[in-house]
Amino acid sequence: MTTNVRKPLLHGYKVLDFSQFVAGPTVTKLMAEMGAEIIKIELAPNGDLCRTFPYVKDQRSAYFVQQNRCKMSLCLDMKTPAGQAIIRDLIPIVDVLVRNYAPGVIGRMGFDYQRVSKLNPKIVMCSVSTFGQTGPLASNPGYDFIGQAYAGVTSLSGEEDGGYYPPALAMGDVSTGIHAYAAVATALLHRERTGEGQHLEISLLDSYFHLS
Image 1 (cartoon, rainbow, N blue to C red):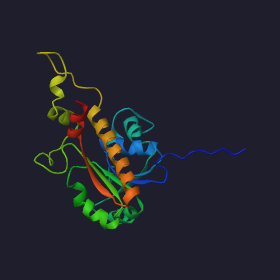
Image 2 (image 1 turned 90 degrees about the horizontal axis):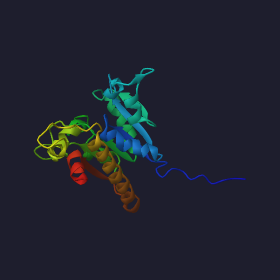
Image 3 (image 1 turned 135 degrees about the vertical axis):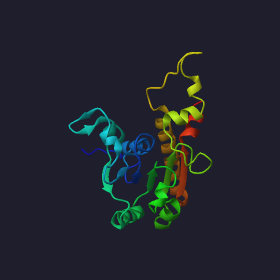
Image 4 (image 1 turned 180 degrees about the vertical axis):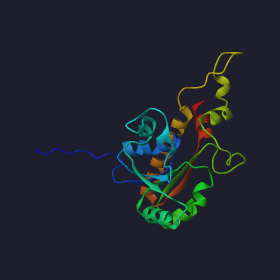
């Protein structure tokens, strides 16, 4: 007797993943869990810095495994023509490109949306950052606790007239990843209907405002 096994919803979709730490990897982790093929690009010579984080067993960081399970890794020197050529060959065959480097970094590598979309007009590019890609704060580095402070969440933590209690979880980063995943899924639906790719900009600060 044969049975029909339903494939995961994102089976057949390919994703190029230029992300590290939490917010960006959360986007692609969720996509991987839904069946997408994730090609994680790590920058030579060190790769994703999360590989060196604590809770290491068998020379593997539990933190890295948590954020990057079900992904394939490819370590490249993006400062070399050979490394850039590999990415140019991959872009036409992927559906989504996710990145959470600081604004401007991917452009200096030669892969901002304007150039990527010429290689693949149907690609959905998702840029994850703390403060967005433009504006007075865009160039500032930022992590979860910085976005939390700008959103006013920090002032709500702790005792009245007392000390501040920092959250033990990266709530803003994970929320940003979930927001980005929803945006990517919606953009793919739009592409199925129209054939058009697009550039998505997801910020940690906006995601924190959504939580309030």
